[in-house]
Length: 639
Image 1: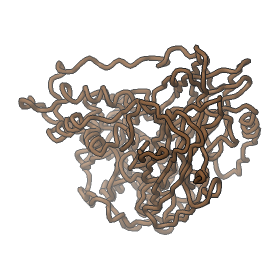
Image 2: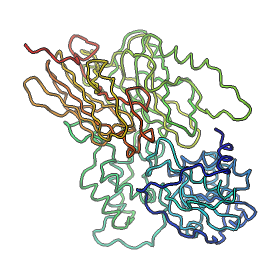
Image 3: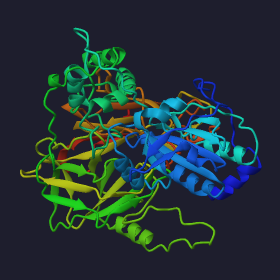
Image 4: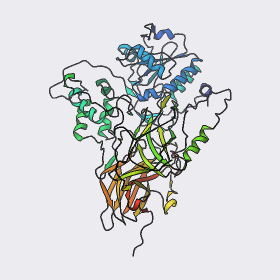
């Protein structure tokens, strides 16, 4: 439905539910019903203008923005659309930034980058922020034609908390308020709680007390060692942690997320030792908390250790073969996440073994993860050709085409559209390329294609991406190919029948379980659990014949947005007769903020993100060049 149609409906009646969640904190009512004092600004050309210059408007929307805050930038397109449509009804939009390090010219350039059509200028010395008592970006303030504040708060309820979104917003607060004001009705909910990034207000510099925790001496080394590999310009972290100001802006979250062990992202709570363990020490977590509680003091810049140097280019050295897209893929600014598959012809004239894979997204801000599959039959090419041959939908004369996702590849729901002949691992944020154990390798036959599935996030602006995949071939003979097996959790039954499960609505701890038995000896090197949005926790165990049960992996706080393959530090020798078990729990209640349906619905197995799965992918080597690990869902018969 076009935004103009929505506006018309809102002008007629209040169609958006207005009841806030009882869990919401109390919104601020500061300055509501009062006239806001005039404030002046300067644009990129040095020209001055004032808030009161909008005196002929029916309403003025003042929105505090930050181009460093991913919550703020995610609203760029919705705000742009509203400004264009409501401009026809006499509403003005003004964007203000509060980063004192940004000039008006820099702000204008960033606003243009995000296609924001209304003026965006710096709020020098936070004069407007203080007048309105703004605390968050993005936070909106709606004034009437007499500059009386009628609304303050969020744009909509897309976010449950910073960086955590509802699948779909249910309350469009700014849209509702403007509809009420333009139709002469009172604003029924004049204040809501804005969610985003705090506006940093500089404090007076004072020398830290003896022994105080400071940024330059104590905090910066922790950020360098644990955070900056992702949280730096051009990397996958949604914001940077390279400067004191950036650390202060995110200080409360740094304390909260590290204490909850949500960051650095190491989801494993039980199991043997793994490679690339990113968990933070208790001492470092306590230091960060002490810094925040102690007033986030900067300290002496001379105490800072040298900046951490990050390697440029391929982390594992120059690859033997680099695969990339024939052209950029363009991702639209708004909408649901996109799963896109790309066919990358390997062009091999002989069979090869791959011992390492390195994935380099050109735009890691929008790439959530990458999975790589081997296609020996050209199935991916057929699917890509079918999609590329599709004719664009005709313009009905009333709406512009809104699908801005364009470029190579094809889209299917959670998969690649066919059964691949094998895999080549993948990539997730923070995951480093690594060589397989000596003497092992992924099989990549001649004349085959690599099909790359990319999970894209949208960030509020039109983006382009061209991921590269570096393949490293075996230099020494490969004794055993690296292969996989799948442990499925579900309902009763054996084999495919196990997948016929049904998670009832309202149940917040619904179990799915599954078993596998080893029919032969093999070596286990890696493990990767997989669930969707309702996933809550998962645990995988193995019990050797006549042995004790041991945990392979346990994750108590499942996050669909962070899934990776975990490699054991010490390979695990599996004996024939070993039993593997998975037990997972799912939350299909309305209290689950990730639930794609409100009210909840009955959920069954399926590839769509709104369906569910419970799989555990095992990686290792088996004897005699087997293409699969020797596993069966049938329990061995007792003699």
